[in-house]
Image 1 (tube, one colour):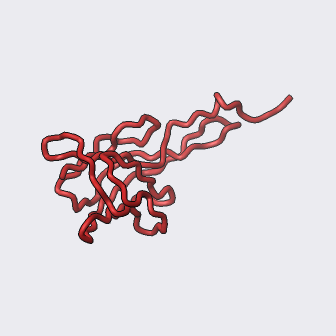
Image 2: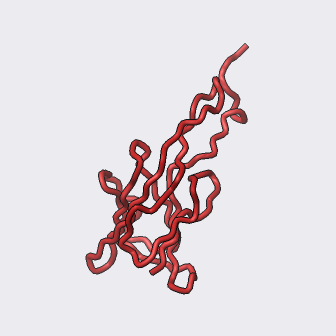
Image 3: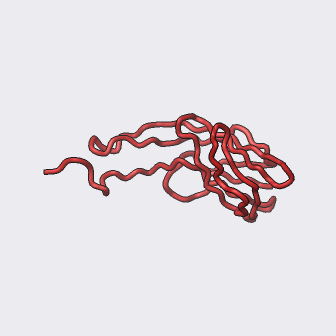
Length: 133
């Protein structure tokens, strides 16, 4: 007999990134160009010389907030600071725990308008935050 969990038993519903959509003032998706996107405390560049309307940005899983830096054209840098609570959920004794991120909120944004749409980060690829500019 073997022990451990089967792949179908160890399903996680959390994700460790936020999905940010950029829209114009009328609510139409707007491709937005950034020289690069980083996060405070990270040496990783998430996107470089990219034009998209949707960006998936990894959060800092060791902290309860992440500040993203959007380095744009003409040396303009915008910030988006998000907060969340971290909670462990037992999947099963064999599979262990998963880390869930809940109560997503925008702490600060230098963009004209930023709206949080969801409370939890889950596996659905739905927009978490909309930024209007």
